[in-house]
Length: 330
Image (cartoon, rainbow, N blue to C red; front, side, top):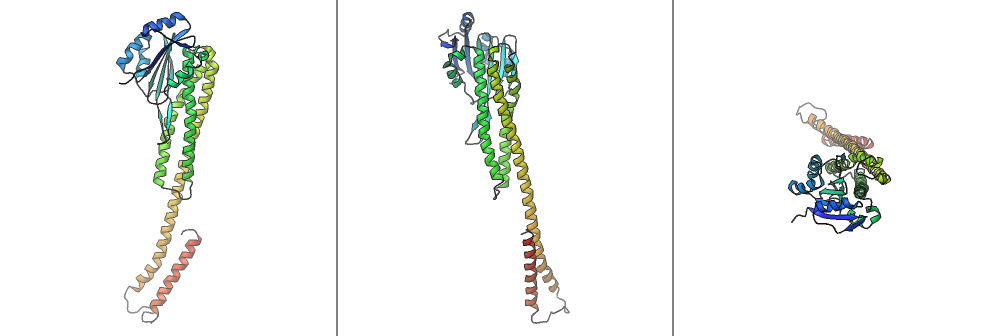
């Protein structure tokens, strides 16, 4: 059976505590305590499954609609009773050299944080366990959760960018290899790599504006003391974005080089075909003339006419071959 609620816990003063099983009672306890918050983690909930959660936490309908649908753009939206942040983690599959993205939605409000995850990428269990091992960080409440998730997602961007860099360097080496490989296969690999980088850019580039707002410390429900931490995440995101843009430029250069090589090879092939055609034309012309069956032709009745004509054609062929070879046409 599919598990929608991955984890739900009440944290008091940065330490996980036993709390009421009912969401409403747990949230009331967190708000009454003053130093506690509730963290609810969900995985791909349906609309019916999310209705109770949205009602208990008074989540905005527009944010709820976005949270139920995958493939959202990274963004930050502020509502009256909550903050809504969309992050897009990316994963790299070395077996297929494929980049895929998921969705992590974070709702923050008074003494609560709700995370909704879509896709297999970036499970939040490790983030939760790491925070639980650092109560001095978790003591800062929902802000600490948002920071930890953002930091995990952006740091993984840098790792994936490094993996893609290795793949593209191998592709570049193949393009400039003397053998050249299969041109059609090389073009397909470049196109596939372009698609992977595009998927990466869709995940990382739009996140710049939300991270800048969080780093500025002017976002409701986010502690101003977290400004330096979000600024660090923003700096890492800029680095990752620059890497992605560099990969895109590298792919464009590799594609241009591949097309230029294809043009040179085609010209080479045309020169070789033209050279062989010219060499074939000489004996064809001579044989055509002597095949016209006229009675009065020079040297027609000479005993040595046949070997002389053959030697003449061989001489012409040898001369043309040397000429084309010297000019690099053969």
